[in-house]
Length: 111
Image (cartoon, rainbow, N blue to C red; front, side, top):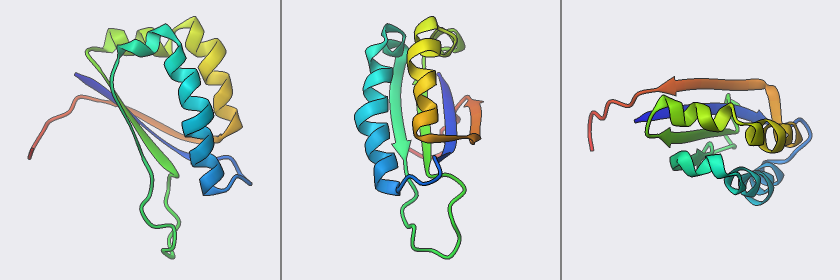
């Protein structure tokens, strides 16, 4: 199993709630409407739990997406549908300069 982890900040001027609403109500339906997204085995979005701390979180969201193998991951991210439908929407809610991506193989330590 392959997992991609992506961390990012919201667009400047966008509130936390606007960011979360846009990602859930606008962006997610765009992603999951393309046939290549059926290769995703699990998809989780995590948000910082407390924005009231003195230290601002490095990311406003972390996305985790699991795939059976790297070929399935590439079929999604390198597809024409992703390039023309999903990727162009990122500029509407993500600070693209903040994006960090890591492709991983999980090692479960405790379950």
